[in-house]
Image (tube, rainbow, N blue to C red; front, side, top):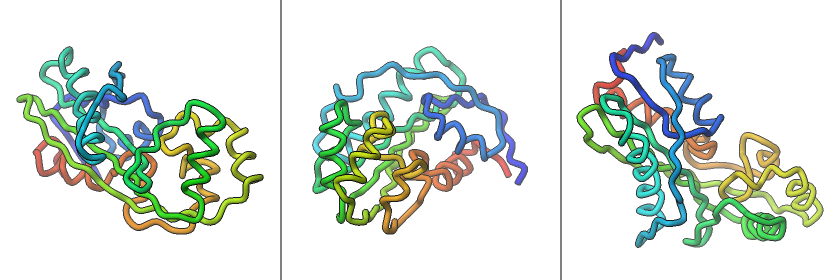
Amino acid sequence: MNLTTNQKIVLASTSPRRKELLSKLGVPFEIIASNVEETSVKAESVENYVRDVSLLKAREVAKNELGKTIIGADTIVVFENQLLHKPKTRDEAIAHLEKLSNNCHSVMTAIAIIDQQRNEHTFVEETKVYFKKLSPALIEAYVDTGDPFDKAGGYGIQTDGALFVDRIEGDYNNVVGFPLATVFEKLITLNILHI
């Protein structure tokens, strides 16, 4: 498809995966990182938490980018209503994966779009991920690659973490960190993109 836009779009994320997915729309955008402390956000539910973090990121960038459309995103992994943040230590990464082994968890990505008029639009996409039973040796071998440490839940579905997945219910790209089909739909609805 040949999509067009007459707006300057900013992705408020340095995630190479989000950049790659947004690039699939074929419209120009720039990347400006937000420097917010995600763990400073307090919310009554995990859904509100991820929504608030994506808005915080988008608002931080929007302050200095007047007249542009800002897209912020945040992805969380939730197991038994508990947030599994990016692990900080080897032990924490192993603990995350032991919890997810042979279980189902949710991956939620919130997208915040701040348009040129400074209207805020948000949504949260949820995908259920079912893991196979993981042996302690497999968990340790994966953690030793270093891959878990920059990923919510301690794994990447687009890297070797794909070997753990039995099945998913929902959008695969959402688990990667950017629910492209729904973002596309919203950008069309908001008249930011044109077919």
